[in-house]
Amino acid sequence: MRVDEYMEHDAVGLAGLVRAGEVTPAELLEAAIARAEQVNPRLNAIVLPMYAEARERASGPLDGPLAGVPFLLKDLFQDYAGVPTSAGCRALRHVPATRHAEVVRRWLDAGLVPFGKTNVPEFGAKGVTEPREFGPARNPWHTGHTPGGSSGGSAAAVAAGVVPAAGGNDGGGSIRIPAACCGLFGLKPGRGRVPFGPDMGEPMHGAAVNGVLTRTVRDSAALLDAMAGPEPCSPYPIAPPERAYAEEAGRDPGRLRIGFTARSPLGTPVHPEAVEAVREAAALLELLGHDVTEDEPAIDGRALTEDFTTLWYGSMAALVDGVREQTGCGVEDFEPDTLMLAAMGRTLTAADYVRGNERWHRHVLALAEFHERYDLLLTPAIAGPPVAVGRLDPPRWLRSAERLLVRTRTERLVAATGLVTTEVINNLTATPFTLTANLTGVPAMSVPLHWTPGDLPLGVQFIAAQGGEGLLLRLAAQLEEARPWSHRRPAGVPAPERGEPEPAHP
Image (cartoon, rainbow, N blue to C red; front, side):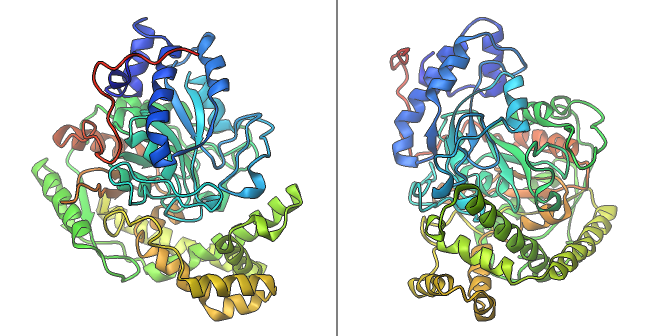
């Protein structure tokens, strides 16, 4: 199969070609590798190739609904036995996983062929993908801009046509932010819908979930069918969907009540293009027959952010301490920002952590009251067009102060200075809309309905009530039909020439 032919199909389409005997998994894999080698030097999306493992897998018998489809794993919490999961951290770069993560096992059972792991910020802690260890990932639409984070490498690879879908996870917007930056569809499942085991049960009390980034809604639906359902170590089982998610993507959503806002929960500026994206989406929804009203939940965005970061700081402290215990590494093997977040976590008491988590319920209740009036909440996915690479780096003086405070182990002073809070809020001003769905545990999605005059994507977000994945997929499919996006191709990376030779087999 030629590379240009390969790029015309989504995952469901490629699987259909394999079932029909029109192409083999090995041929699809070589087309995907050829495309990766063409664009990855410019994008830095794939940081750990797994070509040998993939070629061995593609040469054998494969079964499952997506058998033979090339795929990429996110290099964070998506362990593949025998292959390192670096999480963007120098200390873990050469530490192989001992077993597959459950979600990876389910992708393998579905027949997917993973051939690499994608770039992430260290421990997924930022909305941009610029790790010190691997260097920044870049946006295929304009390589001077970020593809978002933390699933930025996956998003860049999908947008550039390397794969039709790639693994992601979302603990604060890490699927929806890259989807919005790269013109993709990104669905964050709700709490407990997709497993995170076997080594972890429910990270961040269910705020972090596994998922995928795709070009088409039907691919996300098919992959959610493959992923969803409890595992033996799941903290609790949740109600299964009424029907397969692949069926939901073709059903009429009915007449929905949708509240919308373009106001930042942090009270920070929102770019006119992001406001326009929401206004355009609201107009399209009305045209499709939905009831659309400007309204928002009664949530204090600043308080929600503080309650989220309390647990986030504590989680980062535990993570850094765990890696140091596992590897025997020193502090020099972590980025300064990571060490500062961990230092903040060590200043918290157990009571601080518990009280912060208990306050999450206030925000859950406020969003539930909103969903009594509306089926969905519409907001920008990000507060403006994708920022330039390096734009959210701390100033040099702040970086120097961080190093000094970490080196002198003055952790209490770290909290007192307010330096970490300043940096966190600075980063969140670009992505203030996504935390709500993570903290409350509900499903949400980013839909690529808007491009700026400079041809940069800028997605919009929809937030559903708990159990609303099917509703989101129904609406997304309707929007996809009304305003298609999967045919759009980024100009920041080369397109394969039509009729170019098929990739040679190894």
